[in-house]
Amino acid sequence: MDASSTTPELTLYSSRISNASTRLPIALNLKQLPYKLVTINLSKHEQHDIAFKVLNPAGTVPLLIHHHDGSAKPTIIGQSIAALEYLDEAFPNTKPLLPRDAASRARVRSLVALLAGDMHPLLTHRVSKAIRDLFPETETSDGTAAWHKHWVHDGMSKFEAVLAQSTVSGRFCVGDEITLADVVLLPEVWFARRIGVQVSDFPRIEEICTRLCVVHEVRKEEQTLEG
Image 1 (cartoon, one colour):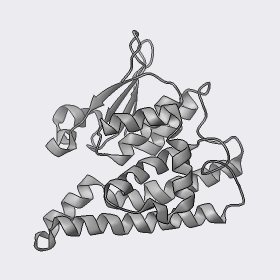
Image 2 (cartoon, rainbow, N blue to C red; image 1 turned 90 degrees about the horizontal axis):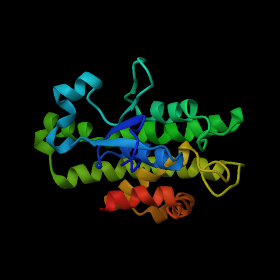
Image 3 (spheres, rainbow, N blue to C red; image 1 turned 90 degrees about the vertical axis):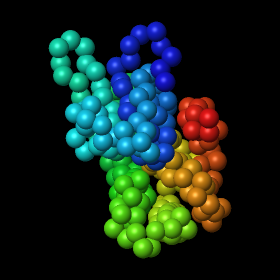
Image 4 (cartoon, rainbow, N blue to C red; image 1 turned 180 degrees about the horizontal axis):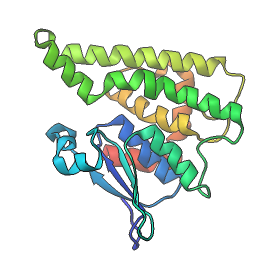
């Protein structure tokens, strides 16, 4: 939450149980951008409230709103990756999360897509609910946990393999600076640990996340989730 005495330009609608939502506070902290946080309780289906769906007809979180000065309409972004890239473009004087050279940017985006495009959609609240609704005869907590563990392990294995193949060395996913790949990876690792996946099976991922978690701006968000 913004501690500034001025009204922040940015409003973030988010949920603590949404991995995608967690990406935005990490990036905003790294960029030192103040923001107003509005919590959406997915367990109470607040994402389907009429007032929220006026802002985001898709009824999903996170939702980022950039309030502009004057009479200009606010910029509303309802997808986390689009919002992350927007922050880099709209606030160019903050810490960049995409590298300058085209090859490195492509590599970051490829890593992001492995998690945000291939793995994460299978783990969302609405997918779990759909499975329960469509196949009630198979619904057990063990079944849901097994589903999550399977796809997390599959996604992490592929991510680890791509990292191992890279000829670019560094402290983080792509080089020595934190990028969008790291911002997207960390919430998925936190989720993996919560559901009992052994992150130690993926030594490069574990090494990167250990380094990330000592960064003050990242640790700040981890402490918020733990609280």
